[in-house]
Length: 320
View 1 (cartoon, rainbow, N blue to C red):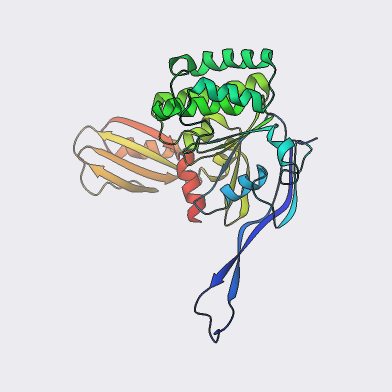
View 2: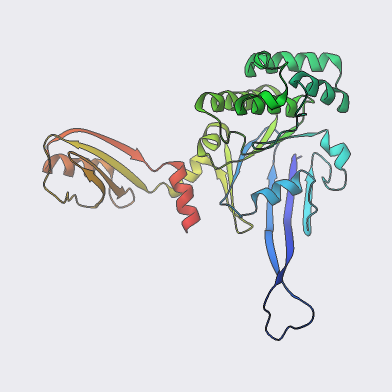
């Protein structure tokens, strides 16, 4: 049985219209479809990137899945419960991390927040101690666990929030921009922690993020939402196969080439001195042919061939 079952889920809002023709008394309204009939299932232990442009409906979906919002229509069942109907019982089965907000008590030392959560979730001593040992090993909590939350750096606070969200061993974790504002080392610690929790505990993870490195390094499945509709659901590899139709060739010439650089089937993206970047369609021409044409016409010192990044693919999907 699937951990998450969503069918024709919708969330609509009534928005007041101003300046309605002939309207002196009363108001006119239009319906805003924040989430417009999405359907999907998630199996236990999956890692999913739920992405889309601002205003696409990501946060609204997550709020319905976490029980904060009630859907206008459709079905939503997670871990055998309907989130908005069984909020208290459901809260014990999920964890939530919002990159810009904290669930810790601001004035208290981190360890006191953990002890309060232990009491709230009624976590047995043995499980609490085991969790704290594991979390400290990966997230290095001992460095700041006795400091008040208000004194923590952003990276320390996010690490503490991740530990707090998984202290009660939830089946499912929602992560909203979990690494926003973090430096490279802090991001790597968080990604390592997420992958380890998924591997060792089979925790199901659903991430919304504008950082495509989060999605590529953590998630095996990606869902793209736009204007409230689900427009893609599949693996990162399938996404690349479907949309990675262009490649970029970076070239360093032996001598300053005549301008403009012309290569059959290629588009010049930029040229500065002896360095140039060109793109070509992999559907129209193979990389081998492009390189043969390049070497035939120019003296080359070095070159690098790159596929379109996942981030560029996502941007192209949004543009379409």
